[in-house]
Image (cartoon, rainbow, N blue to C red; front, side, top):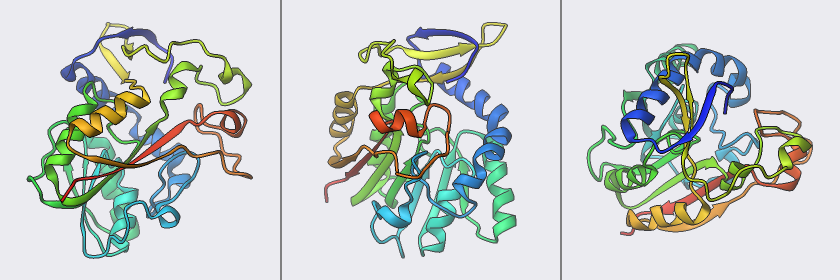
Length: 266
């Protein structure tokens, strides 16, 4: 979250979409500059705690599988999946993020198929992918994350997995500080209005939404998916990198990331 004209409001999907597109168009270059070395050009990092798919294997064996990455950014995860034998399509709302993806394609020689689109109306055919994933992409930024679950369920083939990481619901209560100052509860866990920033003209410029752990589970189940696991990563010993409100001091006490592992029955 970021300084600005801040409020908590009910937001609809067009408002959330416009705010997210604007933010990521403006912030993509700085984001990649700040975090690109940690993310890697061809790597699958699930979260600021540094957990990698190469170690966790939450998606299973991806060789020969068709994979969708939702909110792919510069497609670092999609590029790593490609090197593992998957056929990948990355979808992102931001043209600037996708431009960075193309630059990384040229730099690495690993190319992925990309499409600009909204996670609540994915530009992907029904039952056309074997696996879907998202590492902090789209889910925290849409007004209706239940719609994302339904869309992913639509495009997954029976038996396919959908694994996504997002902000742990716990951190909604806490200030955006990685140290002891971020351990004081200042906000209700049950406040479901969106965090919204507006520019000097009153136009939405950043949005972030909150769901409780129960809300997330209900959205997954309502989409017809089966919840297999929830990972709440502990802060790894020796990992000192601070990323926004993520850091070793606060991370020792409370989880900042939740990773949901689901599948479509079949």
